[in-house]
Image (cartoon, rainbow, N blue to C red; front, side, top):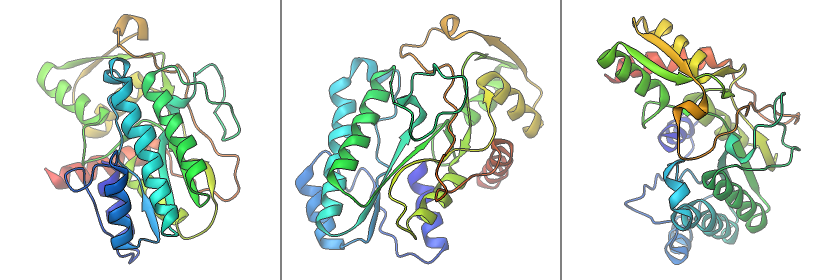
Length: 270
């Protein structure tokens, strides 16, 4: 989902891009990664490969760590060996949600889930393996090239006429079209380090669902419940809004603007 939009964003500003999918490269294979980078000699690498099944990771620590942690090390080290910058997209789930105000880059991560733990491991591996790194934490991403909350809500709403959504998790829904543009802009400078790049504004999943149906013009009833009542396998942070304290990061529009852009793009792709 993010990778497809990064390719589009990079090509839009005339970068030469070599997209490499999972079928072409297994990032857990360090030697395969090294050979590819030696062949292509990239100036920058955006590592969009990830184990993203938050609930599934609870019973698959080894599999999630292999991709999110070890794979991140392989990519960052191979990039460093050919003098390339590396971007590691990460997640708001590295935080425990105990704050009542937005998380900054300087806040201490305390992931609740296996997924969050493995993404934090990937951050550390990227940072220690390549000094020319960007760790980009984002929040609640959605885009046309992958499964996402907006698409799920629209399908469920159309099929059942109502949806059930948790009301006690708050974040910043982020369209991958905006996020990918920001990532490509980072590559034009040397603002290395950790960046919090998520949409402006915040909402609960319940509020987000209501906005989805309003903007899409879909008549569907939105019911709410607590996280405990919903009963998901992995724990989620109750509050994971991200903000940046950096002067050199890239700031995104409000999440409602991202939602409108996504719905327009989704309609064109239909």
